[in-house]
Length: 150
Image (cartoon, rainbow, N blue to C red):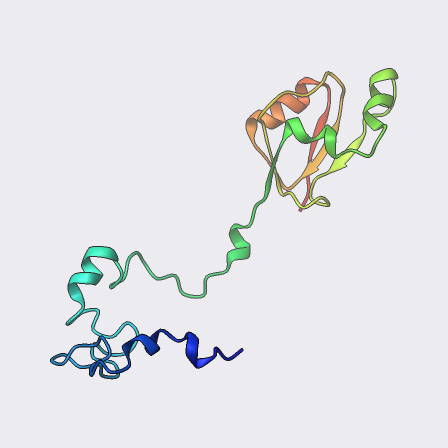
């Protein structure tokens, strides 16, 4: 899309010698340098004022950082029953002698089970890589079991 010449704001400046850019300073290409040039030199005041901490380093270096080592998605026990297939909760609630359902949270993408919230008084078998003390205590209190998986 090319704008027609008659709409350019420069039309108003025709006949005025410097076209709004001044006779002394002159409109030159890149008088302060291109881009972020001079951040530690002639533009230092701006950098210090509006972008403190832009230059320099912080912290320690970690060679060959492997993020997978610390990858540990968590889930709380109050969400365990909602992850079960539909109808399992109702069936277990109605029939107290039914086998305890097994839920493997690693298959659902979680590695660790944490103890926030409460569980209904129905036994449940939970498989996970890690359990917090609270989670283990609450699951066992309902008559359930915790199974550690690799």
